[in-house]
Length: 395
Image (cartoon, rainbow, N blue to C red):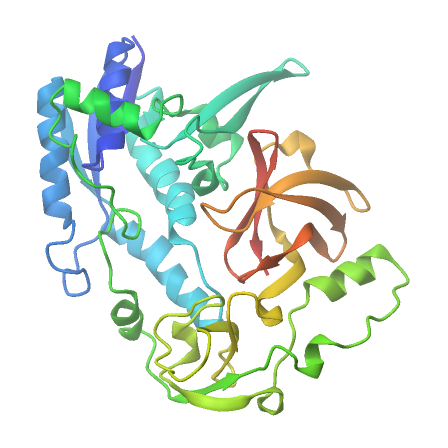
């Protein structure tokens, strides 16, 4: 009998995942990951880890499976929290959920599971795993979940073949309503529980306070750049190569105070991200102000009115060679090669038609339609059909 360790988070998805595995005849062990114990920055009563671990325990008892809690808060702090601060200081916006899957659930946690004699690790993600034969070897595929509305393959875009080999996603074939229905029928304690919104496994963290612990406030100016600014009407240069054109298209506009007018003050450019419109506290504009650029070195924030402002859009992005990740290593591009894909730059975004180009200077993702709020530090992921084949950090 194959042994599976399921990461019980205290939510309905992982609860049903555990139930399904048991039904399929696996020997199931439930493990709850405790990743955080600094209550000073979590929003009180909003999904504290204690309540979650109790819910996970109730589910394990109901299913009659062994259960234990593992404290990974030290590794979490080192691998996720420190990384986040580091990225914010560089003026990038990290994605802790993608990282948590790569570094914690399918690494630290997986090693613990394997040390317990597990054959697999299972999570409550809405995605599926496929297998194909490649020159006599098995290659694993990361496929979209059947529930279009909940597909979470994007969060797993940094997994490797080794990690996928040991992973199971029992609810990938189901929709969220079906999952709730099973939980209700089985009278699982988590059946009615609402989905958690916080950082992976931490509960709701107050991000500004959380950041302020490390990143000191520093007053700076907010500028507004008009949509009809000359900076958006410059004549396009002629290019000698596709690579030159892509470098041009993926380079963000460098704004200076001369391109806009001062409309307010902020407490630190590193607290803000491109595309953000809340938290600026600048009133009196006809349309909402959106952040189109931040500069942590000069501590300036540039904004534009309305979600159609030209400063929000870009046609291409670049991924540094060291930050390209192919799940399907057999599809990896060599210099000079290109590939048509469907890509997204954030979770919940509709997949967009794009072409990948690999050059010595990096991998470029060129979109058919300009994309809004391409954000450094976030992950771009690309699909072929329903399969997510690779990803990278937007640079």
